[in-house]
Length: 69
Image (cartoon, rainbow, N blue to C red; front, side, top):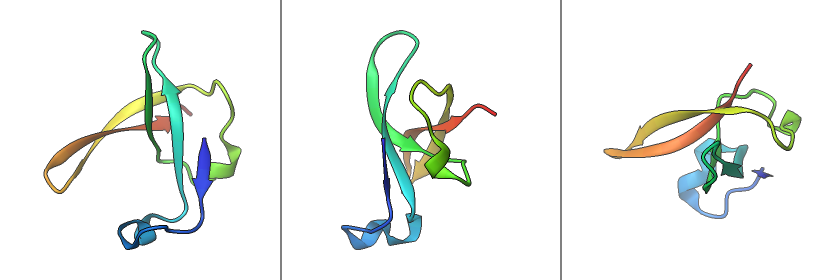
């Protein structure tokens, strides 16, 4: 994963900071997605359990993940 603190496109400025991660599903496939719902993105760890969250953006369903507390 990586935590972005600088927007490389104006569309992402309001999201800063945001995390992008390779998430491995229990079934095996991997997705590149965002990790959301964590106030401290610097506390993410490898093999941390996450749960799927579907968020809508501009009428499109986007799969994102949040840490299981």
